[in-house]
Image (tube, rainbow, N blue to C red; front, top):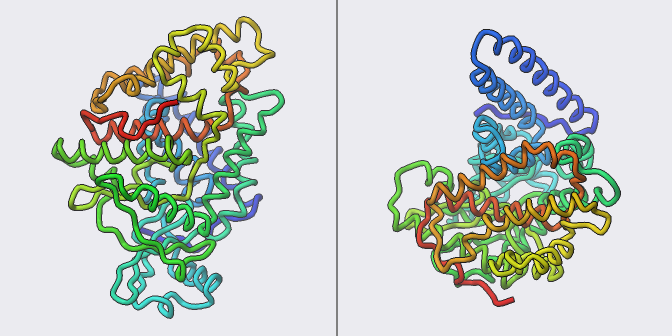
Length: 437
């Protein structure tokens, strides 16, 4: 794969790159309007999506950082984005152009004052995987194989300016307006900033690995403080294939069920017992060992769940509470979905919307075991998402609602459900690590 020798880091450089990408998208729309006159609109729209996905991804992959991280997050929204975008943006998980060898060496000299060959017995200057924030190199020290994650230069410093560029687009897309809207962007900025702090990730990795070590069929790397810094993180090399590679090949149902149970238990234990969860459940953060165990390799994005959100959120996972109109409405206010300044029309609309969503989305919690290979369940989720995405009524409502904690908790569950479906896991025991509220 071709390497890159520099990354645009200044606000002007990154804004210019986005403007250039926007111009290409504009040209694609001109082609689309012409093409649909001579072919079917469906075919023209498919070609438009493919061209836009290609041009947007190509622009973002040279910027890396939070801009590319957003693409990675969007690739998990399989029920919302067109297939072309999902396929192209999913490359941001672990397959983007890596830094060149000179930039890798420069990073080591910045943080350790040495060439990597002076630190390790062996160090491969060609990266094994490259994603949105950093890339991974293989190394050896005292006979141990290591994975060394190196952050791209300038990424941490560009987060605020990147989000400032996409903020107006996001506000229009989600119809966010009025006071307190800034809290959503602040939540995303804080989490992205945490992800660039490898010293924090080092601490979180050890903490969660220790807490979850007794969960069956789950493995974690060992971490090395002497070879880690704020922008470089070293761990033991874990043999395995990425979860997406595993699910793309024929697998036996017994192993799929075992992996699905391990994944589900891992998340439920964190959520219900630690009240802190790995909030980045995409395939690039998981490996499958050759003995069929699940390996978790990235703890950069962790979300703490305060009781004020946890309690009403999971009270609404109970069927009897969803079906109790007065109690249901009370919890919607506690979760800031309904607001004191809502009109009667808004109250009726959002109560109906969230009743539909929760009645469907919480189905796994209403059973002792659940079949995540059931396509009907996921088709219903996709249909519901499409229904409200096209709702003209919703576009007229104020989208500034819901606790800021929804952003990463909902992302966690959507990502988890997608991974469970990719695994086609059946007979998953739901309540292994649940708690009574």
